[in-house]
Length: 175
Image (cartoon, rainbow, N blue to C red):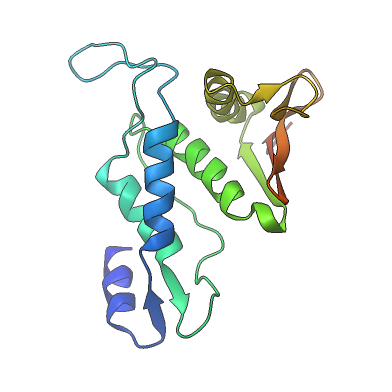
């Protein structure tokens, strides 16, 4: 991926813009806090800011920074990020999903978080729910914030953003 990134930066076909990736990174780091976990030295992370790792930032710049030259068409509309265990994949994927839903809210940003098992998708959903509630963005009806449904039938967060709308659903790839 790094070679393609460097080749794309040199190519005349793609225009590289930093405003959207910078906005997304800043939003994630200023809004989201860890729900669980420990630092390498054993300190609890719950409630501490979720600061992106260098590979997280690289992914955001790569996914959101490239546009077809002279247009507003982003090069990448989906991404597969393969990372070993214990590298903050779940929190990164969840916070990036939220940020992308916000970015696309004017068009009705809909995001599906899919895990091989529902328990995996619920990890990301739980992280988003924790942060929405912590920030006071959740309400039972969705009229004064985001409506969060968390029951046997549905795990979703939805609500209006200005003139737009977002919806995030946690699903199992193999129910």
